[in-house]
Each structure stands twice: as C-alpha cells, then as structure tokens.
Amino acid sequence: MRPSDLIALLTLAALWGASFLFMRVGAGEFGAWALTALRVAGGALFLLPLVALRGQGAALRTHWRPIVVVGALNSAVPYLMFSIAALAINAGLSAILNATAPLWGVLVGWLWLKDRLTPSRLAGVFIGFAGVVMLAWDKASFKPGEHGVSAAAAIGACLLATLCYGIAANYTKRTLTGAPPLAVAAGSQAAAALMLALPAAWNWPRTMPSASAWASLAALAVLCTGIALVLYFRLIAALGASRAITVTFLIPLFGLLWGALFLGEAVTAAMVVGCAVILLGTGLVTGVLTLPGRAAT
Image 1 (cartoon, rainbow, N blue to C red):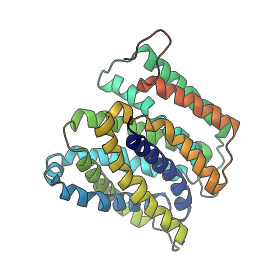
Image 2 (image 1 turned 30 degrees about the horizontal axis):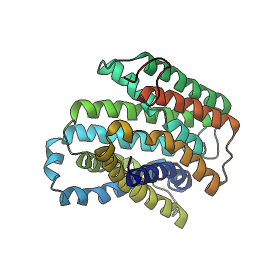
Image 3 (image 1 turned 90 degrees about the vertical axis):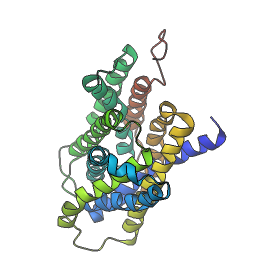
C-alpha cells in the first residue's frame, strides 16, 4: 500500500468515525428526520456536480430504478436509524455496532445470492454477533431517555441500519455491477433526499438549531458523506474492494476517539472487549483473518 493510499484510508476512517460524533451533536436539536434529510441533500448537492463534470449523467437515467432502491437501503434508512440511535447512546457505541455491516452482508449474500459460506465466515458471523450480545447486555436499558428513545431501541436501530447496509451491498452487486460508482453514490443521495423530504418537513424542529448543530450538519453532509464517498471510490480503484473494506476496522477506533475527545464519552472495558470481538468476527467474514490451518477464501 502506497503512503498516499494509507493516508486516504486513515482519512476516510476518521471521517466516517466522526459521523457518529456529528450525529450525536446534531440529532438532539434537529431531530433524526430533519438531520438525515439535510445530510443526504447536502451530500447530493456536493456529488451531483462531480457526476456532471465527469459526464456520467446518462448513468443516472439508465440505472435510476436500482439507484432509488440503493438510496433507501444504503442512505435513507440507515442514516435515519443511526440518527435515532444518537438520541440515546454515545457515538463510540454506534461506531462499534456499525462494524456489524459485513456480518449482515455475508448472511444476506448466502441466503439471497447463494454465496459460499465458508467455515471461517460462519465462525466470523457467530463471533461478531456474540460481541453484539455482550455490548447489548451491558447497555440495553429499556427505559426511554431524554428524547424518548431507550438504549435498547437505539441498539436495535443500529443493527437495522447495518442490516440495510448488508442488503444494499448485495443488491448493488446484483443490479448495478458496471455502473459508475460516483453516479450511484450521487443518485442514491438525491433519491434519499426526496424520500425524506416530506417526513422531515413534518418533523421540522420547532426552534432554530444552534450554530454547533448546523456546523455538525454541514460536516455530516460535506465531509462524512460527499468527500468520504469520493475517497472511498478512489481507494477501491487503487486497492480493490477487498482491501478498501478494511476501513471497517478503523471506524470504531476513530468513533471511540472522537467521542472521548470532544464529548467526554467514557470508554468502558465492556465496550473495548465487545469492539474487539465484533472486529474479530468481521475480520473472519471479510477474509482479512482465517481460522488456523485454513487458507483465505
């Protein structure tokens, strides 16, 4: 890996890890619906001009139907779920649970696309979800918090979000292979913005959010959505998808770091152990790790 690729990988992990911090700051004032709608709208406004500059507008028209589905599964629903979770649990825990996306991806691929489920991958699924159970056991209170969301509901929202990511990855593989990734990203953000427009208007905050909440929204839209997606596609082009996905292992570390530094969030022993177990499972599922005595598949 070239130094420039390593820097890009770390930058991407830092940006996506920071998204949980910004959702934690913005969700309480904007509400989950408005924050998510404005995030994807801002991302679309950032990405669509790049699509036009690269002459990929025709791809949007050709593939608009699956792009709309990807907009729902890969942006609208998961971003909304993580924003809801941000009302009840800290940024670090959400970032850790985000690492379960590859676990869902391999399960969905096995059930839907009949992908091979090797012993290493199967072990990774069980180990990864064992880590989730450990975290949920430690955190899952059913008592609603300040914003009417319990920690248990927040953890469930995170898992629903990552399930959507897993479905979206397999759906994209099946329907959008060969489509320009930048066009898919821009179109899916625009589609998500349209889906969320009316619910966001209905649930618009009654009081004007603070400057810090607006700054968090801007960072979510431009840094964590627009620029992050461009970086991700560049990494895929430079390293291949299997190596670019290693960003999954770094996101929880940055999520914990930013939450501790800027929000004073406590990093508990249970969170560290649960994170390690989930990442071990994710490593087996993605092929970064294999069971002893077995070659990578």
